[in-house]
Image (cartoon, rainbow, N blue to C red; front, side, top):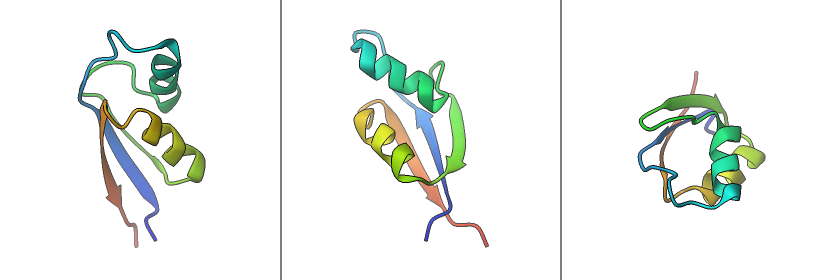
Length: 63
């Protein structure tokens, strides 16, 4: 089971809806090329699914 997820914003939120911009802010992505690592939860996965066209994800498994 993957314990953490690392995600990076690779596209701009300019032209996106308020909901998408709010989701990026909730994920902690405030600007382009910003990378965040968080614990993998269903809520986080749902947020990442909503902005999948703007972010790149990488799963990591800790020992």
